[in-house]
Image 1 (cartoon, rainbow, N blue to C red):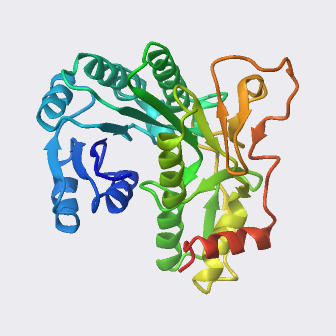
Image 2 (cartoon, rainbow, N blue to C red; image 1 turned 45 degrees about the vertical axis):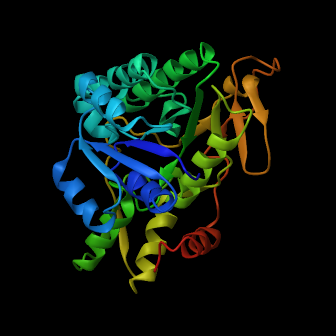
Image 3 (spheres, rainbow, N blue to C red; image 1 turned 30 degrees about the vertical axis):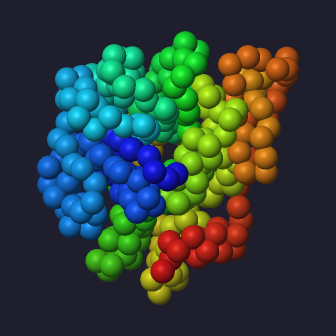
Length: 319
């Protein structure tokens, strides 16, 4: 992406920072977020962008920044995303993850200048959701899909992917911190639990592909990912820190967590369009009547322990 004015909502998070890292040189960027301390920290690394305090729950703050900056592209990364926090705070989650998105869509409708593209970042937890976070993101997905149907001049793109390695709140710093403090055992919620994993750079590749694809308007773009058993994930981190002998103890699954995640459900496969070896898209209309398609579920695409270690080493997680 070059020579664009890009507004990154929730821009001080891990994804927002990495988007800025990739796009800052060749574009003008506005970082829109509610945390002034994170903005000040980010300014030291990326002084070029414009920084504005605002909140997706405050429609006027969105409009003010849009009128001032006049973005070509808006990428919405803002979310209340920790599963168990969302379970305990459903009302606040609805305000941020549903109402905030409606405010943004309304602002795009009301904006006086022409916006080229609106991009929404979703999660595998929106697929067959069992928790407040997943339900809120699933509803938001449909809001953007519906908005896309009425648009001919604004490109609306949706990206759904799995757990981002080394993002805010990820397990990597948690496990590393526990090990570095000399613990002899790591807590694991379930020895069978699996998750889809993606790096920040791979997530941005997906976002850029969705932006550039002529066929992605109003469709949910999903990467074809392999999954990993969480205990293999923990063992790999321990091994990389010289703790091959570390033990594991079970703790209860947290409120709202799934044992396995889905990227695409069996029902959604009726609307799937195979794109290439890396991505598929979930479209508006059914293109088959297959109600029994195997879902893209993390239980069925698990790497073995050696593959998991090599994967994490290749992605730079074990450095």
